[in-house]
Length: 215
Image (tube, rainbow, N blue to C red; front, side, top):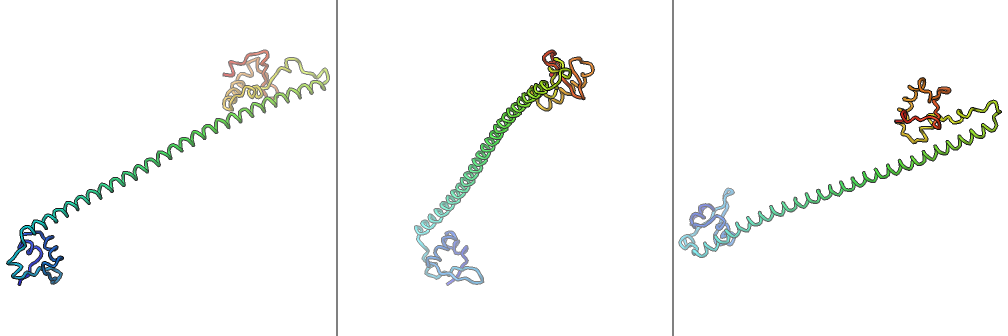
């Protein structure tokens, strides 16, 4: 009786180490562990009568088939991992696209609301200006009715409109009104079309054209 390591036994029987382990598990070979090393115990009969060639080929085939299956399993696991990552990336991309679509729609909605609000405020401002002008005309008429004859304004004075009210009627923007005001102030002393009263600028649109100063 003798003992061999797994590698020595595989070489002795001319088979793989995995086949030796399989024989040990089946009990066709005895084994013992000494100092952490597994040895195969060989008897005279077992050594003298090795396994048939067909048995060796069978176990070799099983080993090769196991290796093939392991390789296939590894390939399938890698493919599964790749597909999982691909699906996760597609979900991330789809979510980003959806978020972008909703963001663009929100921006469009904000723009529409701003336009509606601006138009609404503009209409209110225009209506308020018209209301103020109409009220001023009524007050002027009433004031004229109660004024003594010698205190009534001349016809030309009645036709005067302040630059501020004139620009309101035109619905100019605040920035444009400021530019026009500065332009009129520079020309006030030289241009006879512009009348200065108590530090305020007045126009007579019924008699004069101011288009050159309203650009």
